[in-house]
Length: 222
Image (tube, rainbow, N blue to C red; front, side, top):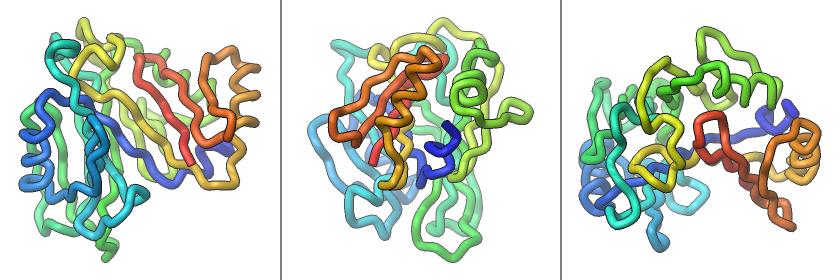
């Protein structure tokens, strides 16, 4: 089971928002991101050097108020930390939807941005950590799960919507893990059967989806 995370190239958060245009202005003007493409309700964002869908580092999904609402209390998404070559000083900023971002100046010389930490609030830390530790054989230290792209950090919190289905509220909806082409997602699915975890995998083995311990959708995609 470890191999699927050993072969991850990056993690792409998908965030539900109410007004896409209002939020896109923040992501472009404040965070220095670029809109790569817009497909139906989704807007794919990347660094200034991004050109194609494979350069996507963050996705916004517009979800109107007729079927989605503001989170009651704290959000699942606490903060996303982005390493960016566009800035020489770090800062924090909050989107119109109340999502917090921290910009860290890039030290690597690359022109691409990199998400180095996805920070999440959780009311049942043991359950959410067990998804990665027991389900996938990863290790955690002080509620931090280390991954090839960076880390996912969990913080103990209480709130009525910390277990709410992601399609109901404006919050983090999906973490999409992009895996290397050689990873056999059907083989990973068979291992999930052994663990008793529910999932969906398409016939071509291009996408495998399941839900973590706090109702965030986890996608493995090629």
